[in-house]
Length: 440
Ligand code: C2E
Ligand code: CA
Ligand code: CA
Image 1 (cartoon, protein in one colour):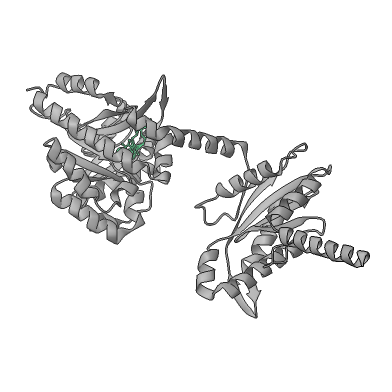
Image 2 (image 1 turned 135 degrees about the vertical axis):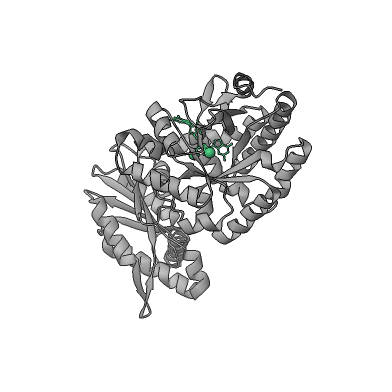
């Protein structure tokens, strides 16, 4: 009786342990099992590699084929992984469509990721072949690392590093990427306060007409001053575009620009047209135009006193929706410029279709002017096409006199760059206007 009772108790305990460690769908270990088994292996002296693998668009697969097929897929993927690794290695299902792999001993990362990718990307379930895409994050452990959670974090970070790169199936953890992520979260932690504390300022960079030698335009560029430090827009703008804080910042900058224009109009008879950079994320907001027009009213600024700068990336994203949006903006009277032209993938067709006034030719083309190579031909073609399509041209990043000479000869409309002026703070910019005799 006693022995029987003991046996029952052991069975029950094993059953509970099983539940705590086994993933019922794949029969593999679950997250808890992964932590425990990996921890054990970490004590060993061999080289160790962690791979976090996930199935892209698994949710869509589930929706399309149902949960039963979805579960069968997870099981098959688990089996394929198991077949691709050694008996002494570990594979567990950590969550939904995420698998944790832990390899002990020498590993050829290229080889194993390749094998996993090719077996899983075309998989057979119940005699039907399915095409899948997987992505993997790889972390090669340090000899004395013992903290499983931090190893998992690093493998996940490696996985994150290939987000958006559709043709790259795996990423390997690097210190640089970790530093980048740390910096990114630092910036994210500071951004809300920065607006409240008025740490964002606007600088204006003059655009000169080589024909009249006068300033005919200026670009508003945001600056972030945090105590004694400056954080560069090329660092924080991409982060804000990713987390959508750019919507708030663009609006803030736009209001300030309107305020500055109102002030300048009181002091000067003539002021240059001001270009404002607007990110795709802001533009795609449903009430974008209503929101922005409120500032025009508030500061008595006419739309034709402002030019909206959008990048080539913005125009290629969602052409139909974007076309309507830009047409409405244009109807109000705003100018529209395509920024960084030549770096993206816009087509000539798009140039004709969208209501654009200005092309801003990217600095990379201007830089090549003195090298006398093909870029000059390309630049020449861009300038010719602009003329044909009645578009104004602005050259960006003009630094040298030979560039001014070339661009003047080729009838580029406006030149912007350090050779004339760096971006100036608002008080400096007003002094620049006075010096250029646009005074009342
Ligand atoms: P962008 O619109 O292409 O702006 C031109 C950049 O070139 C500016 O960098 C400007 O300072 C720099 N630049 C101008 N002339 C020269 C030159 O002769 N030589 C060199 N080497 N550089 C020159 P900045 O101010 O660092 O801005 C970087 C990018 O950040 C901008 O590129 C723009 O895409 C974005 N950005 C700036 N302000 C805003 C904003 O208020 N909203 C949004 N959405 N984006 C902004
Ligand atoms: Ca710009
Ligand atoms: Ca640009």
